[in-house]
Image (tube, rainbow, N blue to C red; front, side, top):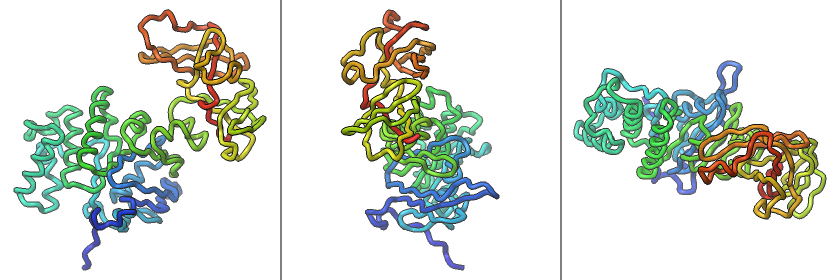
Length: 382
């Protein structure tokens, strides 16, 4: 029987190759295509997030990377070597599951040591590695406890320590923070980022939480119906979405449908029925049709009680619209106003609450002027 090939070390891989290469991978379950000819490169030492709606295929992709599912076609390469047919226990990859999957009858120490024993390490090596992991995730003094004696956050750290103990080249995280409360989730996000930087390891996290992905990841891949819609940094994804679908999926957005009226020197004038004429800064060559939509993030929309001010970003009269406050949501650090424009469009505006007093707040049914700069508008094919 021939011995199954194992991926080479990072040092042996060509320096110009990404650590992980997913090439035209397809995975079907019966007549349903969960992952559809997906290709993706991930660099060594990168914190990468897979984001998307439920059922988009992100967890199926993660399971193929871990070896729990086999691609129907396509290739997965790690360090330049095809691992598509390599079983999970022979891959230098580890996965941390959403439910943590701790063994209830084993102590913290034995849970962490479980994979090390299967790797046939010596007792001395196991003891040293477990002590290292316990210190790394701040579980000192809890080594003899059983999972039922731990809090949710402590269980999460045990699962993380177990996943890291074998020093994988690639750590996969399947919505690991979903069960934690908000404060603990924020703390754990910071801890994961610290550990990833400290270890220099490649992390791939699957999440449906956009804020979590934006906070933690170097790059984000947004999936929909088994395909990657866009791969970009958090800022690029938010400020320069490549489609209307991405713009609507990532963060809050105002969308106004219209038709290109004129194009000149990097600016596009769009005629809209619901808001009137809107001027936006957009590369003329980027548009493939005159049927477009104008997208503006709520925090880019300024409100005033009178004329447009100079800080609205452009000459008076450009993108100056009038309407009435129709809804107010106080969110602590900001207030979200819904404005019904005179032409019919409903726009959302986020205003920072810089002072405690309410004297400058707007009231429901109050008339306001809405302003936004051409540079703050995105023009996308409808």
